[in-house]
Amino acid sequence: MRYKYGFTIVELLIVIVVIGVLAAITVVAYNGTQTKANNTQTIDAVKQFIKAYSLYAADNGDYPQVTGCLGEGYPAPNHYCLSQSGTSTCWGTGSANSLAINTALKPYMNGKVPSPSMQGAACGSTTYVGAYGYYNPTNKTVTVYMILRGDQTCPPMSPNASSPGRVSADDATRCYYILAAV
Image (cartoon, rainbow, N blue to C red; front, top):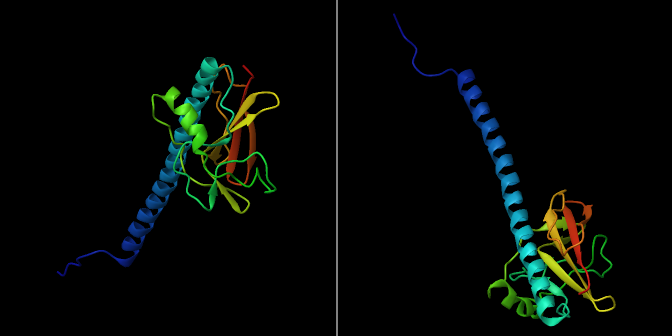
C-alpha cells in the first residue's frame, strides 16, 4: 500500500487565506490603537497647557499675550499647528512654532513643555498637527485649539475652560476651548 505525504494544494490555499485574514484584522486593530494613543497624547498636553494658562493668569493678572503653537517639535515646512486666520478650506493656513508661548508657560509646567502628538490630520491639501493657543487682546481671553485625527468627540478639559467646541472635516477634528478673561 502506498501512502501520500504532504498537503494538497487546496489545503495550502485555505491556510494562506486564513493567515491573510488574520493579518488584515491585526493591521486594522493596530492602526486604530495607534491613532487613539496619539490623540490621547495631544489631549493630555492640552490639559497641561490649559492648567498652565490658568496658573500664569493667577500670578500675573492676565494670560500671556502671545499666540502660537503649543509644544515643541512641529515638523516644518509642510505641517502646521492650527491657525485662527487664513484662507484654507479647513481652519487656516497654519502657524510657525512660537517659542515665546512655550517659554512663558514653561515655569507653570514644572519646567517641562509637553508636546502634543505630531501625527498628521489631513484636511484638504493641508496637514495639521498638535495644538495652538490664541490670545485675544480685545476681550483678554485665550482660545486653545487641538487637532485630533479622525472624527472624534472633544473631551471636557477643566472648570476654567468653556465646553468644548468641535469642527470635523476630512480626517481631522478640531476641538477648541475658551479660557475666560481673568
